Length: 325
Ligand SMILES: NC(=O)c1ccc[n+]([C@@H]2O[C@H](COP(=O)([O-])OP(=O)(O)OC[C@H]3O[C@@H](n4cnc5c(N)ncnc54)[C@H](OP(=O)(O)O)[C@@H]3O)[C@@H](O)[C@H]2O)c1
Image (tube, rainbow, N blue to C red; front, side, top):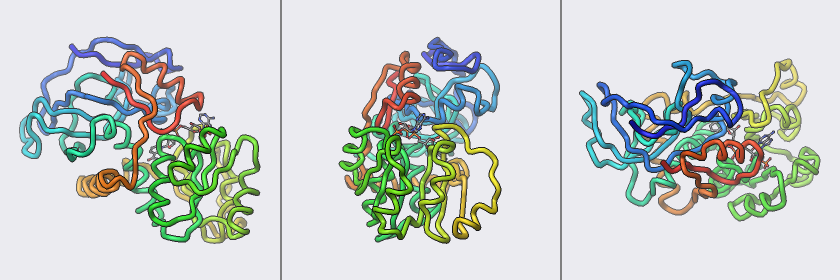
């Protein structure tokens, strides 16, 4: 039996139940990982609350990213062996001391990336990679708006977009978060709970507006995010931390400047193993070189997963949060 955090009934953070679970030996094509650190992500709260359904139904183990050590391999696995340091995005099922994971979802960790860094960046960093390099290719001189710039994905996006030479504009919920975002490559911060962020983006860009908006907030920033885009700009709606965007009339994209809009997910971008491996290599190179740092600013014992969710949902966190089994 190993310690895990399960949901038996969807709801608030109080439904996260710390208990022992049995883990069978790894099946064909699986590796068994002893987890050293587990990432906490906003998507974990969508599964916990019932906004997203766990594919296997109830009860389920929460969590979508982790890092650890291979302790056993199933039939047919040749790429990994006992003792390999690995990380992966595969959920739900990560809030546990040990688990089996399909080997084709796992990547080896370079020696210069710690388990804690890896758990704080696999889901968030691979997301930043595809958002900046694949969904829309950010280039030097572009004006780029990131919402929740001091968050887990946000701080990685700011640093990476800065490295790419963009003019990085970020919205944040407090002055402390503004300072942190600026220390992580965000050139201009906007306190969007107090300031009109559309007016500020116009002012900051001298009326030129942005080539792309990365919006993980959803309901609260829509449709205002569209007004931050220049004609033919790209609206990337990649999350819903304030609630999901409701149905809208697609003609709004015409009237606001022949805009593009997309709602991407990491699962689609990393579906093929070759893409996952290439994206991870780019992320590890960016982090390994020091160009992008992974601020793991909250660390909790696994048994305190409910506190981690409360902190994340109440906007009390910055950067990445991890659980230690
Ligand atoms: N599509 C994908 O592939 C993908 C992958 C990873 C993450 N995501 C999405 O990216 C977003 C960020 O994820 P994360 O894990 O890095 O979380 P996070 O940004 O660290 O935390 C959420 C932040 O959103 C802001 N926020 C604004 N309104 C909020 C509200 N009503 N309730 C709670 N927070 C609110 C808060 O920052 P302020 O205080 O600064 O406003 C809060 O700190 C989430 O929407 C997530 O679902 C998508």
